[in-house]
Length: 119
Image 1 (cartoon, helix red, strand yellow):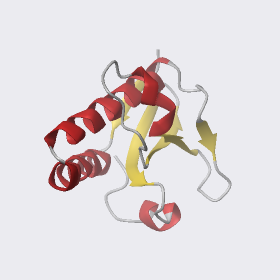
Image 2 (tube, one colour):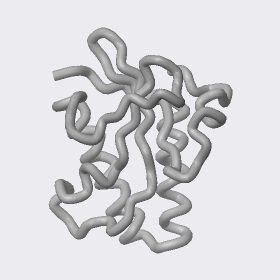
Image 3 (cartoon, rainbow, N blue to C red):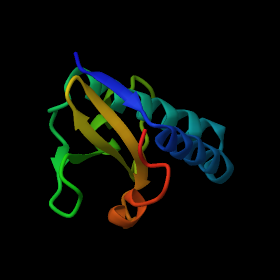
Image 4 (spheres, one colour):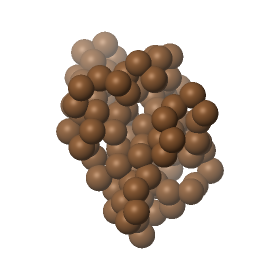
C-alpha cells in the first residue's frame, strides 16, 4: 500500500469545505461530505491507480485528479448526491501527496500556483 500524505494547504481546503458545507447545508450534510472525503482518501491509498484517477494535460507533469463522485457509493452512510470536489494529487516514489481539494468548477491551474500548495 502506498503512503498518502496530506499537504497543509489540502488540510486547510478540507476544513474550509466542511465549514462552508455545515453553514450552507447543515451539520448532517457536512458529516456526509467529511465521510466521503475520508473514503476517497482511503480508496486512493489502497489503490492509487483506481478508476477515476486522471492525468491531465492542462496540469503540470505528475499532477493527477480524482473526483469525489468515484467514491460516493462506498461510505456506508447516506450518500452525497452530487459531490463537486476534486482531490488534486502528486505522485512521488513511495507516496501520494494530496496537494489541494478544489471545486470542480475552479480553474485548477490558477489554484495550483497559490503559495502553500507544496507540502
